[in-house]
Amino acid sequence: MNEKELVLMAKDGNVKAFCILYDKYKKKLYNYAYYKLGNAEDAEDVVQDCVMTAFESINQLKKADSFQPWIFRILYCGCTVMIKEQMQKRNIDNIDDCRNISSIENEITIEREELKAALDILSEDEKNIVLLSVVAGLQSKEIAKISGYSAGNVRQKLSRSLTKMKRYLD
Image 1 (cartoon, rainbow, N blue to C red):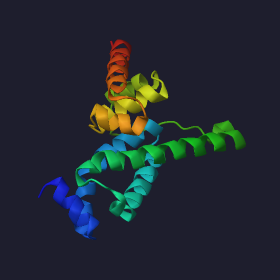
Image 2 (cartoon, one colour):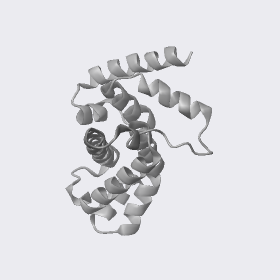
Image 3 (cartoon, one colour):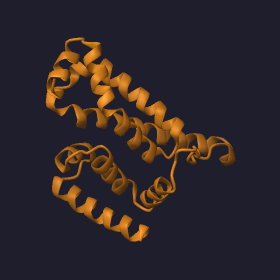
């Protein structure tokens, strides 16, 4: 069964079809959120909210073959809200109590931390474009719809950002 058929079944209320779609994208969704937010717990929370929102509003998806950019748009917005909440909390609470640092887990490798550091040298727009392209696997047209840039501008920013990261990692 292809993705378009699964989306149509999910739109008709088939929970199992939606679960199959979720299984297909859960790792990409988590990785995007993790690298965007830099915190495993926040990433899990925002992905959970994203999936619930997608499940509840799957009928609003106009084109069945646009599921991937649609769900990543939901996640992108969720991450933006989470970052704003973190910033507000930092303004209210003691900064030492609210640091948004990566939780160190046994399975996190040195390469993953180096990649995170390379992403951190990018601006927020550059980071979003790289994550949506590399982690989510979206095309420049799809990223353009999410980011508000033209597809050509997305390709240019992606190329420059990847070059920046490569220089940092060398």
